[in-house]
Amino acid sequence: MKKVLFAAILSLLSLNVSAQVALKTEGQDSAYVQTIKSRAQKIVDGLGLTDAQKAENVRNIIANRYFLLNDIHSKYDKNQQDARDAELYKHHFELASALALYLTEEQIDAVKDGMTFGRLKRDYKAQLEMIPSLTDEEKAQILIWLREAREYAMDAADSKGKHFWFDKYRGRTNNWLSARGYDLKKERDAWMKRIEDAKKK
Image (tube, rainbow, N blue to C red):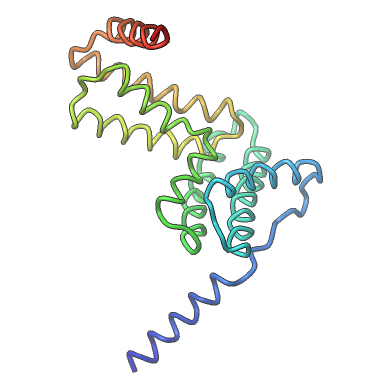
């Protein structure tokens, strides 16, 4: 009985993975659709997928996510932010769940980075370079906050909104590091000097 059940589950999983993911373009402007398809394809190209069907499905999942976000943000005005945020939260975890059928956790992270201009990696690298003396605990906390920022940024309406979340969390990080005794101006000046010195070599 267990073997039959296990075989049935594997069969269903196989069916889901091989099924075609439709591109949900209904009601979308044709030029916007092409822009989003191109944007999603660029992210997929960075994943190095060799299965064409899988790559197309992943592209469509990402593109559909952009369509959904556009629909949600277009629905609410600035006086309805609570309702907008509630709907965004309702759908927030759908992207990772859909991608999990086709991608590893590392690849899903790469998709998230692609949708947020790679700010997590860039900001984390910059923080480590600016303050080489950070402890492992401090590095871990900075990365936690950057991951939080990325989750919020993924649901933002546009590039300005995405950058806003990383800048907001950078402010939180800087305040936290200052409270722990770091002189951020001194650290930043020393970092800039190291960069300039490296250019002269």
